[in-house]
Length: 253
Image (cartoon, rainbow, N blue to C red; front, side, top):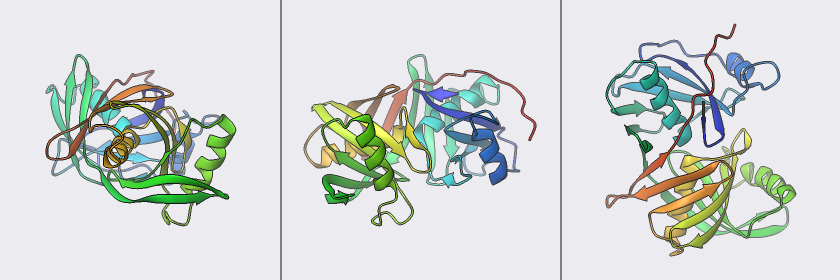
């Protein structure tokens, strides 16, 4: 499955309890020897929600949260007949999220984005304005004019492993083009560039809103398409976007 080009191999069921092993995750995500995916998503049982969503980076590391994977997980459990309802809840490492499936797309509650710090960060001798934002997972939002491909790949890799972020971070290079529009390019922790990122979209809106650069509701354009971010009065952020099932099959693990 993919959500605006951010692709996932999705497995499991809401009754399953045995997770995949790290070496199986690495094999599945390998684009030459396995299926190929930005992340592997395991659907399992939850005591507190309709199902649990575990999202694994290609190196086998379980991420706290992924908004694009959350939409794909909802479509997966719906298409496979596990639930007939259009309103669902999913548990991740970071929180329990509400989900609504509509004809216009899938809307998921991401939660509150917290701007932890802001200032300037030095990347290989160049200084950028940045904001450190938590959306259940870590983000480094850098406001800058659009970078060349070479600059993005270089500075994205440097920022991900910057000492300021001891556990690594997702990195967004963002440009605010209007009060309700942001252009973004994302470098995801443990993956590299992906075509879209929902939590990264929320991080950009939160950081831009904190800096009085845009409102709390905005469209975030990225390589894979547009994600709409809406901030409710209580501060909780919701995203609406599409996702696509590409194929189904069987793999020998």
